[in-house]
Image (tube, rainbow, N blue to C red; front, side, top):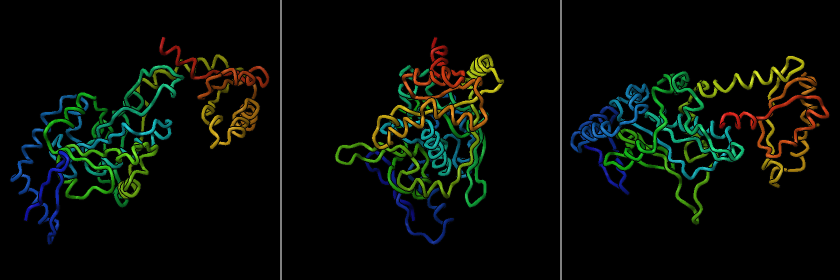
Length: 339
C-alpha cells in the first residue's frame, strides 16, 4: 500500500491510506519516496540553496527530529498581504511563525518585518531584516510538546532571513513545494520534504486577507498551543551599538542622576473614533505624563526618553517648560543615524 502523490495547482499533495500502524505507514512512505523520485528531489532542493545563512540550517535539530536530510525541510509564511501592524504585533507574529514552522519539524525562512515609513517618522529604514534587530547567533529557542523539549538550539541553527533571490529559487524551481493556508497540516503532507508555505487566505469579495495577528490564522492558535515556543531574543549588535549614544545624552541631561523611558502612542489613537480620541489625547498629555512620572518616583530634573509616533514633537514641550523634565525623542537619534 503506497501513498498517492497528486499535483494540484503545481503543489504536491499526499493522500495517506488507512493503515494498521504508524510503522507500516513509514515503510510505505519510504517506498513511495523511492518509487516517485522524492529522494532525488530532496537532493535537488539542496542544490538550490546558495545563500550562506540558509546553508547554516543544515544541522537544524527540528529537521533532524523528523529524520530529515540536511536542507530538505523548509517552512515559509507568505505574508505579503499582511497588515503593516505595530512592533508588538510583529514580535507576536514572529513567535507564531517560529512555533508553527519549527513545530512542524522544518527550518524557518523569514521574510522581512512588515514595517512602513510610518514606523520611522516617514524616514527610510536602514534595517530591513529580522537579524538586524535580533541576534540569531545569541538568541535561543526550544519547542515543547506536553512539557517535553523536542528540539532546541540557537535561532541561527534553524532560522534564517531569506533573500528575495533565494526564496524565488526555492519557490519557482521544480521540487516538492507544498502550500496551504487554511487548517491543519496532515502528517502525510508534512512528511514530504521541500518547502512548506502558509499562504494568505484567498480574497473574499476581492478583499485580500489583511490579518494583524498570525496566531489567529486558521488552526494556528491550536497548533502553537500544542507546540510551545520558548524563545530568548537577544538584541543585535546594530541595536546594541545605538544604545551608548542614547545613554550618554540622557546622563548629560539628567540633573537628578535618574532617567526614564516613556512610550507614548498618539497618532491614530487620537484621530480614529474607535479609540475614544478625546480620552486618549488627555491620557497622553504632558500633564498626565508628568503625573505618572511623579507617581513612579521620577522627579523633575530627571531625563526622559520619549518614544512616540506623535509627529508634532512640540506637543511634549510643556514637560520641560512647565514640569521641569528634560527630554529627548527617538526622532533625534533617527536623524543622527541617517546622517
